[in-house]
Length: 416
Image (tube, rainbow, N blue to C red; front, side, top):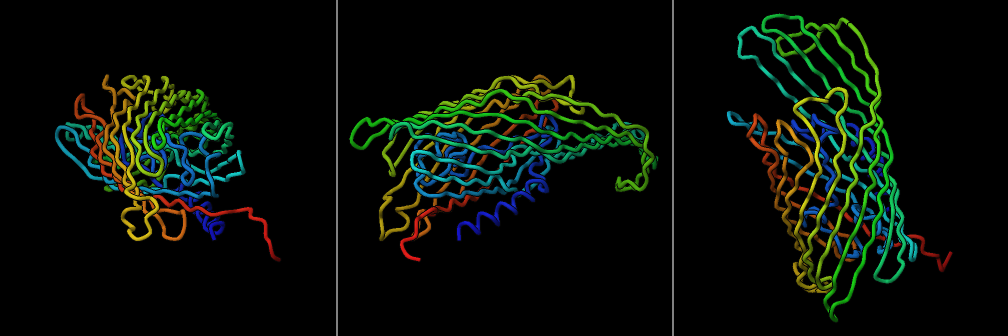
């Protein structure tokens, strides 16, 4: 049954990862878009903290995790996001529903492997700039697309409490933007279409270590490092004269010129360090720091003088609590209760303002009776950006649902 579910979800997500508009943020105009992937629902419910050697959940942030799996694990997640965007004079609301990830983990003794697909970043902005002059020039900007990751990971358990791993990511995607310029009352306008076809490979290495402090208490640690990598971008720019309706729909096009060029964007390196303390299958509290180098993500169509990139940092504190993992009579006692807080310097600087993101996470893990599988619900409340310096502040609420299916594969038959 699980194999049929995996095949169906893989096909569905492969299609939707290209078709979905995964963000409504105006900040998705910059770089490769809004980086949406923040880990699995279980991890995000603890603000990104995931340091334990988990045997039934996949850790997509550290490739050393796969050798700790005891059963074949399939995980998939999605999010409903409601955002209020505001500046000093007005506010608007936007809603999006997206798939976040799909992955499979296969235990093979001391070896574990994993593979999957992640819609990593999204572009989805609609911006209108209206001149103060009644018959002045106005502009409308639209953008769609993003970057996806297809990955393969392998992990090996060197010692019962120590494992290492590595993964390779193939990044691919397309970003399309439209700039429309027009004058009030004039049916003709100019249009610029930009298309960037992106591709590249990056590598990530990780390690997990657990040490017994007392009979019940354990110390958990996690370390991973993503190498700096290049993302090739083949760009095409078309300039046209267009006829417009009153709703700004294009009715006719007269092509002027087409330009093509290539850029090499630099995806920053990233170091993750996590520490936690707790009692296995009972409780855990942990902290994590992520430090990323300064990337070079400006492309031909979004290389603006008021935008730059800096080193990024993220600080997280989170954990979980299980009242009684082995309770048969009380389902509520087997529920995993999760929470976390985080503060992030995203690395994007607009109008000399560093764009920051901060939030509170809550979540529950609901076990499916009669199996090791579970349903995970996560809630995030956060704020990104600022209304200072003519910028936009985003106040968002996210509801996420993740499914983690566990089953035993490759069992040798005893009877034909």
